[in-house]
Length: 354
Image 1 (tube, one colour):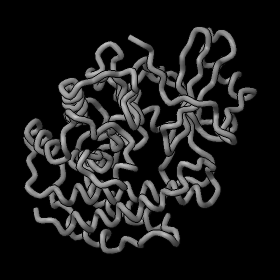
Image 2 (cartoon, one colour):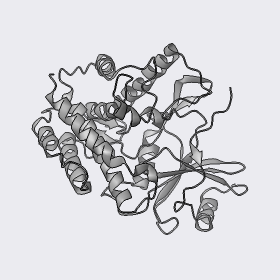
Image 3 (cartoon, helix red, strand yellow):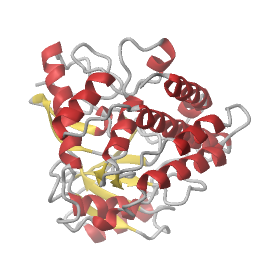
Image 4 (tube, one colour):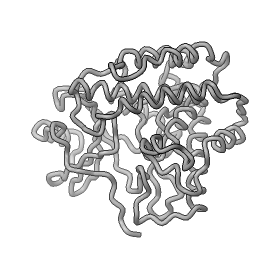
């Protein structure tokens, strides 16, 4: 099969790795490094900075926090590293962890190294070289959601993973937390969102289940087998993983899931090929998840609104950092428009019948 390149570019201006400081650290942690690495930077991420370091005998991924002021608990590279290392034996799709650096003097932030998985990451669109008909797409779609279900079924208490999160009270913490984060990141050109915040506070489910959740489960965070693209060999980007409610995890994923029938604006926000023939609709996904897990929910609005509002908060935090000059990536200059749209969509979902 033709080798398919991912979204790797030259390092962005102002985001270059300081190799004079990094190389001694690398050589201290990997004894047999050979040659000078070819360094590229992935353009898909909107949060942490991710690089590929191709040595003659090692192919590595380095993830580090961005510059600038960070929200409490955000961009915690050591946590992300240790979480994946602990989860790997119980969820084999986690990449192999190699080393972590908690000394910010090396690169100006903490960072970690992991193996690079050789495969295809389905970004906004499938690669042109990849020919997938509707049936193959449908098989991939079911495989994708099956991985989320498989993750949710990991017995975190039995496997000693309970320290990945605070556990009980997750729903309330998330609602209070995202309400505050959105308010703190508000700029003059976006709505206050108070109506949505109040609705979420008033509609929190009285019961919650707890499991390991990914919190950013999207098609552009999985790696496909190049020989069989319907087969998923890796799940990436565990920064936000926690012990939390599985339906909130599903709601988060559906906030990113753009359908072919959606309007022009939401299609312009699409980051994964969820709209191609063969993909399930959001309604079908909710039904499939409920059927496979036995957790049917008559009224899914709370989880949909939560996922959309949380995404508005993420977009607004990114735009806030851009507006303050902490990142110069022009991809983020119109993220305030996303915040407006998502708040309005939340209000529309709130009005729907169950």
